[in-house]
Image (cartoon, rainbow, N blue to C red; front, side, top):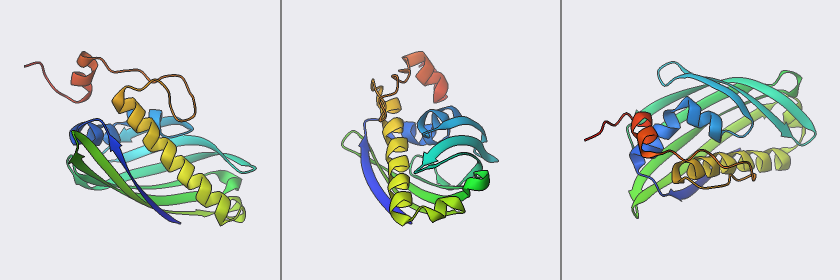
Length: 174
């Protein structure tokens, strides 16, 4: 299954790029993420709980980042196993372009599933994959822009004050 989309985020490409590399931000943005740990160099391990149609599973997976071009592009590749529910694997190529005082984020995703998940049929899987991608990028956008509600009506994310932003993005006072 393949899909692509573009969205405008009211943050600089550097801020968006840094957020995509931060395990704490990834945990906030990935729907159903219970734990994300690791580093850019070694990849991230994640535990995600999701329900796809009638199948609910806890997926344990590993995500690697490659083709890193600072503040411009990266490739995310991941694979997760959900026990009897099956597996999911895929990749996303993400591009960041400065546009209209913010960042235009575009992505192309290629994903595959197997096991019980594959038996649900492509319409359910494709719809679920699109929903997951939309929720992830909605949550990322909301977190970076300091919005008050996530895509699923969850509690507001913490708005970063100037001091936290400087620490988070590694900037010092001038």
